[in-house]
Length: 364
Image (tube, rainbow, N blue to C red):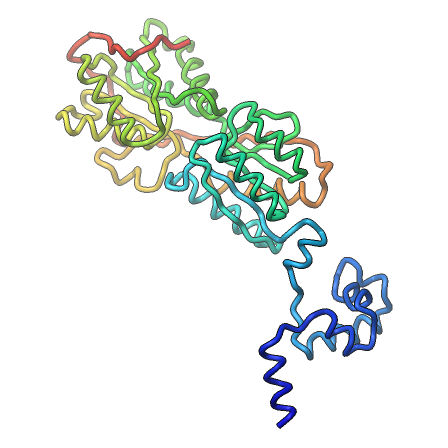
């Protein structure tokens, strides 16, 4: 009967390192070192084997919370994105989780909602939870939150958006080259009145894509063309629909619209369909990111393919190197996007009117 009671107590109560030490007849510190791969070399192999055997018999499992309080580090990686509902981030998150899992880490994902204040709060909270490192997709240019990560001593890598901080490594797409390729695509189709829709230039993605648009406007083949920029208030479908609705109301002169991302482009397509304007017969539309199902739209969306999984795996690889060696040199990794041509872009047609949109501003 007493043996049965003893077994029941073992099942109900957690076996501690003290129990292991007492059963093995050694000091607690000796048991702790023996069960720590980084410290077991300090003890004779015979003693290590004895303690390991006792730990196995007792069913001992390390207390990771207690360990984190001692070392100020847990087996977790923090990942911050600006908008969890944006499908752009799904492959990035998945690739990061897969790579860090290979090193024994799990990932905590948080949504900053494009708010610098919320980003700062998330970083502070993750620091208090002793995350081993951070991957941040929410940094703006020259973001003070990048300095905060360094002040808190958290190994940090930027993904997708580059804060352009001289002590923060980053992995992003070569947006300028990609958008210039989109401009060349519509120029080759004969378009001579082209509009680009951009969000405010707070992030590197917005600034670099506008640079690519302006570079396309300076190409020799662009001589005599009209290039304009409309500033969006948001990144989503509703904003794309609003902008295209306003363009139609003011008299549509552009024959091609390049949107900052696929969501804005989808909104433009919805507004065109509601107004009975044919795409690409009357106007061509393109986006950036090549989100899932863009090939299933009507018409399928021409877009710039964004290598989401590569962004995730490369940023995770950088972070693992940084965690293992805090003195790693800062790296800027640029991945090359490519244009995916689909049915939403076609040969230019003569526009119905030539009245300029009131929301336009001359590209710089």
